Image (cartoon, rainbow, N blue to C red; front, side, top):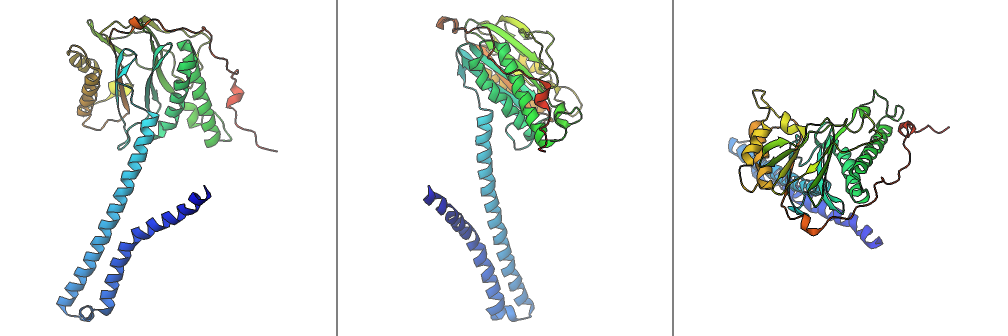
Length: 368
């Protein structure tokens, strides 16, 4: 271990030396030509043209060398960013416990693969549990909140027997995250209503699809998904959602706003509001239901085709420049899930959690 640490600076120094070797040689050759070459000492017009050509060639070579070095650094940075983004917002498997799954997203920040939208689908003993969320704001600035919510969801879906308990875990994780941000950014104000952190919120849609097709859904300020089936394209429900997570506490009792079934052959299309709010140059909203109707004409409906059709149409509608992050997630029931038997169900109580109070959001006291 000590040997590796000692060699690291040497290797970095060797790489830097190799990178500087060629520009140094070019610069030395140009200076040597100016000082030694008899032609460079002449004042004639031809001699001056040759001297200018030499220095122009050296300058061009240096710019090309610098450009190639910057491109290598950019490619390396993009590889690192792509790996980090794929870990944070990892693509779902094409098949998940009898469900066909496909997802895609567009970021409002050019060059970023993800932004303020989040989604995840995980198979658990309680069924396939899905989250779709939208962080206030967009682009790279929202990634920390996305990480906090997704990290809590990936752990809670396996621990909590009831979907409402998962929702409470997400709410507590977001509250802790915002409290830490407030203490870091505004140590003297905490979660004061006038601080920017106090205005942060996340809209969340939670689904649970059991192996027999039973469907449970919560919405906290998030658009309800569309159901694609023999009946056409319809919203899953028109029930009033709960407030977004962040500014308001959850009610003491939370029950799914929708209870029903996802029949074999039916699909659900989850999306963020950036899809419906996207406008073209004339200010017209994106006709998401019409696009879904066109995509659902194939029999059977392919989730990959639906996602591709929606995102391609969105790019065409916005002329390739969406103003908000957009995410789409499609799940289709293959009709083979009930044959595997019902999953084991845990107790109906949420996991224990220490009581939460407003004092948890107060700023840290200064030492005496």
